[in-house]
Length: 169
Image (cartoon, rainbow, N blue to C red; front, side, top):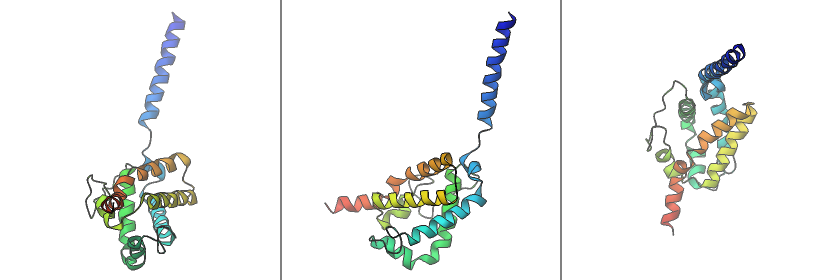
């Protein structure tokens, strides 16, 4: 009987410990270090995208090239919006509100439609994000989660390119 009671106690302790650990699990926002850690990453990433030869100032995509050369006065605002977006999708306390609302509260299709971003260009921006996360030594688990959150919006961001490609056929 004592042995059975000890086994039951052990099982209950394991379950309670697991439950407590689960309840204490932090959000991605918290694990990234909050807004004061996210903002410098977004700042670095945004500057790297501007300089990126595939999607930045020398891009073969005329809309991206124009944005990264003629609209740089808007870059500080874009960095702010990107920071809010990351904080929002990472489970933080900040609310992102799109300047050009998409189909969801964090939808990006309307803001990117006119840029006609190809899937390959999106992938290059994702690679730039990965390099930025490496630069800041973001742990692998959090890096995977950030990149997955970014990748989840690939269809929205490339919708303008895909629509233009379909019309051209």
